[in-house]
Image (cartoon, rainbow, N blue to C red; front, side):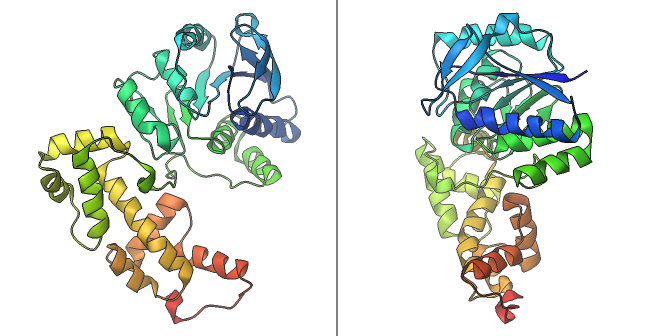
Length: 327
């Protein structure tokens, strides 16, 4: 029997948060016929307008029959308003009839409102991770992860990350070969692991705390130095425990992850420029050595420094085998 996947939308939802995972599940049916069937639902049913202006026909959620998977899509901003409470109530009821419940991007706010994320690890778009953590302190937000699975509740980061989550679900349901086939059809990576970081600039964060802002500024200016949590806490004039808690609440990631990302942001342009060796870049950005930098690059952006440099050269029409700087 096909697994019933229901996408829950609301006025102003992001179309890609719906269409991306839907296409992934739909393509799985080509590799494994009758693997899934689909419903797009809303609280009241009828035409629902996406943030792009396109209207989508939906069924009323109350008439949707027993589900395998319920997925709450996201919006361009964190959903707010009395309607979120009504939707949260509906999600709680539907989750009792679903094998798993999930969200894409800022859909995590509605899912959190339902209480299903209490005590769980969750993610959302990196830009909204601090807001999600502040609004719902009973869950643990990991603002770096592409997707999370905590029990039967899944969450994913923004837009294309919904496809990554869908691929992981397909692999769980139908096996690796089907998921790999879907990835090839969609021309996407098979598959970015949930633990791979969302690559986003910490420069875009507004910590909302002068002390944390000072720490980030200090870290950018001292990437070669020891930037242990003890040193950063000293810069912030806080205890280590208080600093770790305040930093994670303000930024959405731990101090160690933030420093790693700052170093990658400093190293990446030098890697792509191609004039310095990887050892030189690693030392200047505070990694210590090229091997450590390589591991961090793979973990954060999913590509080695060598692969990044090669892709830039190919884009520039230089297909050469490299130079001493590539060592």
